[in-house]
Image (cartoon, rainbow, N blue to C red; front, side, top):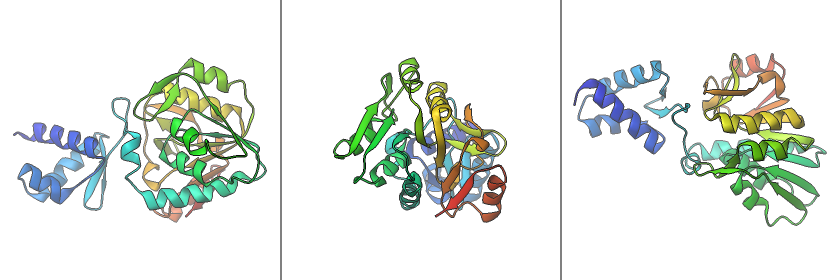
Length: 253
């Protein structure tokens, strides 16, 4: 196996599993750890992976997006803390949009059940999480169902969403950066998110620290459009302050 073929195989493996350790990759491809580190460095320079201490995880793009199943296995303690903190920002909102994705699903589960709420969502897992809540009315956006995320998209979803004025939108993204704002790989998903941002009085972004600095294909909002950012303490305080200077409150939990 030559170098280029090995790097393609590494990329496929990392995308398939959601992450990989240098030591495991070295054993898998029967090469030195330093060779794997060079491979990951090259893949990172090409925007295909992001390296971590001892490994790497895939960068989502127009040609690749992790499934909801993979997302449920990564950073679970951080996502749970983020969801709990985000739910506390509900305030006096009576109508809420909850985005697709695993962290938004956790937010849905953390919302209070003792008060009337109307929740609009494109996500079937979010709808399922709230289906048994006595005081919650759930409106599911129609459209084409994306199997990887179990959420609806296309003009049916955006047209329905355009008919609502929502008190608070909980927004997710595949990447957030100070330069390029909030991005996602699929333009169809981006259109739904953009409509939610447009139609909401307040907007909260919730996501783990690994999303910061990542840039995907389709942009749907500026950082300045967001009232609050909820993330984990993996985002350095200095970087959090830089986002604060753009307008939103940054909450690290």
